[in-house]
Length: 296
Image (tube, rainbow, N blue to C red):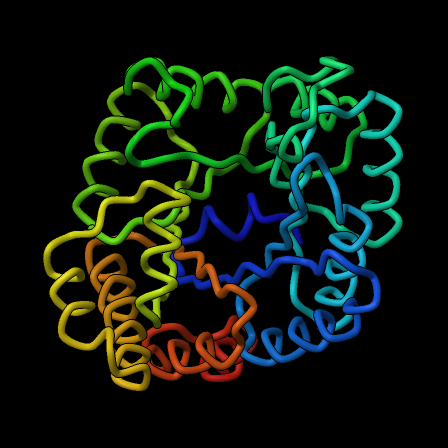
């Protein structure tokens, strides 16, 4: 299924993101994580790739595993440092695996590496290549607080609109902990004519170390309410885990209540955490086939 069809419905949706291993020896363990996550019946599973396109072959393998479980797959594809031939080869591999959806990203080079073949300078260049190859639904990434490389918010939104004009059918946001940031972002996008679905990205943070790492790597501000939660429960791993799951669940429910239909869960390869969130939403998010059975 192409996600452009799924994301244009009014049905409440929930998807999950996983990342592949860095080593092939760990691929079976990652495949088992995919199977456990698929058992929750998310709308689709998104599979990332490493910096500079490393682990891209594993991305295709895990996407194929998701499809084998009956769950649509969204494969990440980065273009920085890649040649046109490499991109076309990867697209052929993804097509052979049955993948119909690609999240097109510029990406980052591995630390210390240089871009020897600047064929693709921006995600828009990659989107053009994917469109020329044909047969894929294309998604992109967006940042509610603005892309780190953007001069200002206006430039960032103008570039998102350009991506839309280059074939991007939907965007998935970077994680955020304050829903008001997402709502304000939506208003700015609509005012500038960005009309494709904007999937809200939510990450359950279940430990103090994870919170600190997330803040450092993503630069996402931590709202006072969540900071207080971490201060109170951070020294108690079980309490922090429970509180983090509840915080993410409350974020998701608030998004649904305010008309946001599609939420993407950054699972960090933790199907146990995802399972608890799905259980908290059991009467709110109903997998599509279950909804059909109930209707009948």
